[in-house]
Image (tube, rainbow, N blue to C red; front, side, top):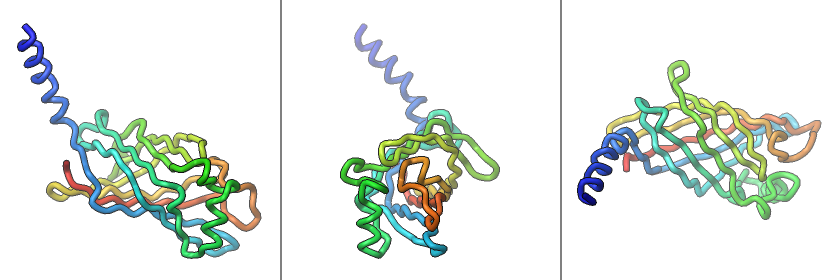
Length: 177
């Protein structure tokens, strides 16, 4: 009887496993841009950790999840990096990770989009984020550019010189696992 149950569970799980495609990042690039005093400030974050389960034909069983250490932020100017990492902005001592996780994925125009939960500095907001999925053999590119309001996440206060809008670009090249 136990063998029949075990075989039944295995047989029932095969279609579910076939629906999901797990992807492992080969390379990743997370960058941002914000205007400060009319000048674009560009920066990067590193050490991306992801969980990518994505099948464009089975979006309801797909999920995208990632986190990056807030302390890895670099703009190329040490003093500015130190300021952005302090408690008025990212508070990297108290909030080590910036996290993103899909709630729902769906096709949109000629690409995809999803409702994502984003957590920055302990504040979680949901927002729609568009992304491209371009597959070539057992590899694929996941690319997204979106704008978020830094003040929605309590990053810095009101400023006459710094824009509230931060443009975020995520580029991931991944391989099927």
